[in-house]
Length: 224
Image 1 (cartoon, helix red, strand yellow):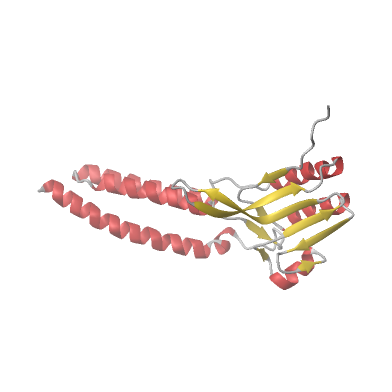
Image 2 (image 1 turned 135 degrees about the horizontal axis):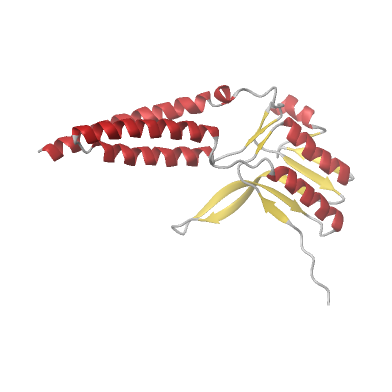
């Protein structure tokens, strides 16, 4: 009897990788494989430097394919995921997989997996922290004011604040950040997220306006 040896695969969540990290990943492939191919679904490139010349710093799609052993890292692997209502949703996720069931392929797979896993990000990002603190402060102030006035405003604001916090957390966990710039070349946190901050400010303003109207009507109804 001999056990059947299978290929390996692993899916990653919310990657954040800079040029140094991608160089290290490519270096692993170059060290272990007889040849590698870097592509983005449209073109092949001799190096990450050449890729940056044509696509810019931000990477939206990349694959690194090693030959002999055959191992593949793919940023946007498409898969159909069943939804709660029975529908099938298409999702994209980074995947590392072996095409050969051999010791060299497994060794590269585990080394690359360890490197990539170190760059997975949690849901609790700096952006979530900032908005969480902001919402908590607003809820505290509004709650104290509401209890002093005896209106139903705190209940409405707490509900809206919880909804906004969940929304921001879901938004922050939606994608990946891969760049061909080094950490020193990359923009600062506020420069990188200035557009997102603007969107969230508009969302918060609209939610505040709607919440204020609802709170006023709710409080007026309770008084009557």
